[in-house]
Image 1: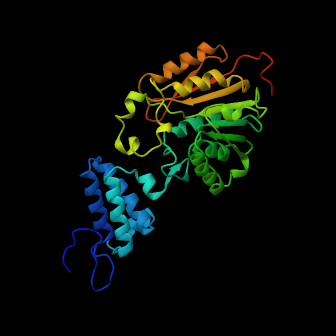
Image 2: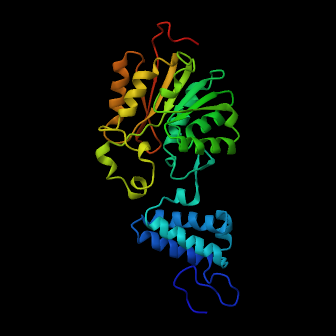
Image 3: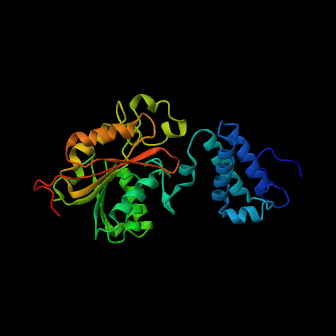
Length: 316
């Protein structure tokens, strides 16, 4: 048997791929490193794509690395490696991304959930832990990751998840159904706070949470190609300074939050966004002092503030 040039080469005696799991993994890692991925990331992503193609757990891959790949799996793996080398994110290639311990379905209709956003969920859930049946709105839900994680962490919570994209809401509903919380989340279509109008929610919300688009328009073209060319532009472009949507939410949230209601917003680690958002919140006069929370990489990631005005419009 000659040495094949790719994992799709076939053993003429068995019809299986002539490459072992281990060899295919090494080939994929080298191919991705050659496409300018960091070598460590290249090896990890090659592993993820290989396990997806073959249907393996990590333990199975490591326990039997010399087992030959089925030909169909080898072909699928090689194709996914080439797509990843061309810029398609691995999460879209395998159709999922873990968030808060749950595999979320993702595709190019939604932004891929990031680990740093888990900090936003943790902080808000901790603040609300002693409130009975809190009412929470997740604006710009995308894949539904934030709303679903909050629903799982707070079984008594009631949630409304909104998005400007009907396609994104389809993905979010699918994820909510897969995780068993779809009956506890209502859905609203439209930009920013528009889906809240006409629902009788004024002054009733315990929290309004969002991970708005926060990339300044001029910086979008400088994003990595897997982000720039594949993730939804509406989930990335935050206007000239990256805070266009933050402003709308900050200015309008007070009408919907109850006295002591929480506004929780994710911000970019760059461009001094946390300080800018703190200033925008202070300028409304509706909130007490805002607090900045760092993610586990040490970056300023979350801005939290509670309403401190009860003028009769804030009622429980």
